[in-house]
Length: 392
Image 1 (tube, rainbow, N blue to C red):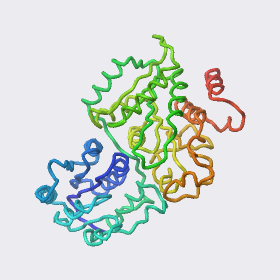
Image 2 (cartoon, rainbow, N blue to C red):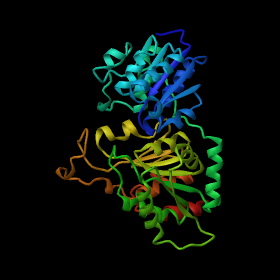
Image 3 (cartoon, helix red, strand yellow):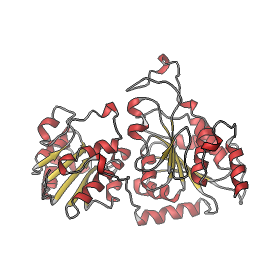
Image 4 (cartoon, helix red, strand yellow):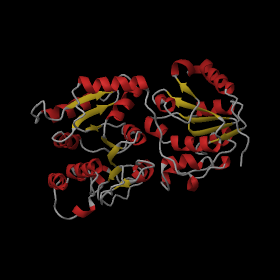
């Protein structure tokens, strides 16, 4: 076991959700080395996650404007060497960043041995077959820390994220300007994703929004480049709504101003409905109620990519202590890596997750109910709402 570490670099250079899922490992590192300087190395798109981590002392953002090209590579090497870290933990990086780690001056270089060059760059590497989906992605990250005296079985961490105060004020201003009254709970519907997994149909998100706005404020959200999708879902909800000052409000937000404001807006919401995507993991890290839809394909499954560190309900029901719920099509998929499309007798399978199921799970989570007593009774979500209100 490696001792006497005073400086650690942690590296993850890809997308938002992937970076969020390194925060439990970083929290474990902080507990193991409470006095060490821990610096995060992160992509520009996900930089706010490491900036908002309570367990990091500093952040190095891989801005292409600074670190591209031959000169940029050596600028990055100098930046890493200036940290004088004894250990580097690479959760994920491309070859270029991996080579910079090799020249960083760190004695202990830890990372997954998944590429030919990783065997050269990481002298304390570990072989992992993440596509076998034997554990959650966050646990695979923790598993890399074995040489530092940290193991998955003894680590009980959640994902972590804090909100920038300036962004929090901007989010509060947004809620006021859009008329999102605090008299009603607010549910964010995030219909977009980068395409790394199968998604729920757009029409289902629209129908869900129409049903939820009878009871809750609804905020349709999207990231940069998802403006057209957000507009379609928003307009689909609007077509069948009547406006009243005493009713919940629905509006939209596209994150063109950056990740910090999107995080703050999610933090203002009570619940989030999203597929397997970064904002879902942001919501879990912020302690929000989350309902997420997942495909049955092995490498895309919730076993590896689902909400982490919180009690989770499923299609079979939820319990009062659950903070999140995962719904998966009830099919015998059998695919490990990608959808078989029309070659599969169940294709398309994602529409099999009904709007009623998602709505019912969300209502139970937000209102503190349990679904087990209603399983198989034929109750609709509206019936459940009426029963719950009568019991109150």
